[in-house]
Image (cartoon, rainbow, N blue to C red):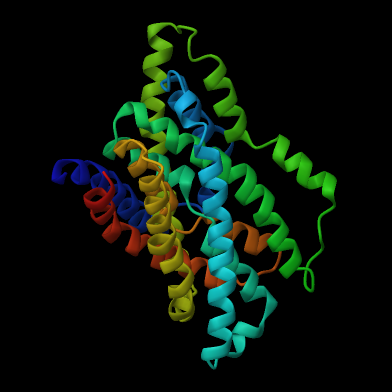
Length: 312
């Protein structure tokens, strides 16, 4: 286990630290360009390459249902914790719909694409990686671009504009990671030239490095430190409670240990950058979303060996 954890932590610390340090030397447009490049090209290529390595995925049919259940669990836990916090804490910001929307997003949406798919291959065998891929794709479709948009639209309605239903359908149909998985899955038995296969494997490591650099850049630019205390609640829900429940459920259904660990890690990844992006788009509380990313990332690093010990 120590060797696997070292392999998982090394790129996380190195590339994130590099992004944190070099941000002052980069042009202002670089983070946005890097983010869009990862979203439209990098992560879809990563998922395409992983899906081609998946072989037969008949045993992973339960993964989308577990993912959907985890997303709904996060939404329910977020709603309950928000109601309790409003009752117990004397904090006027909790009555603001914009904060409530960001609270729910941070409780249910995880960074499955950049963090989850970057860490899981170091900690599970190759046959179990498809479980993580299915989790990531399902969360993008059902979570981020489905429930996440609906929550953002509802709580941001007072300050923003609700999107028509056809725009939501368009978003679902144009998710690049979904197309990357579909193309990789349907071509997994078609042999590519050796140079192409080698390039696909190499692209995964490039995407991992780029994703962590972007995270370091964004963490260095966060100005919502005053929201760290409030953001502790959704961060704990996302990185401790959700993966714990998913782990117990997978134990009850007698799932293979490596597949179980892959799902637990994906359920416990830090709050997604998508929560911050949706907060920007729908005028939700940006400080809370950014602070939750910080809190949940720190908790995530501590929880990885715990999950390996209990669920592997």
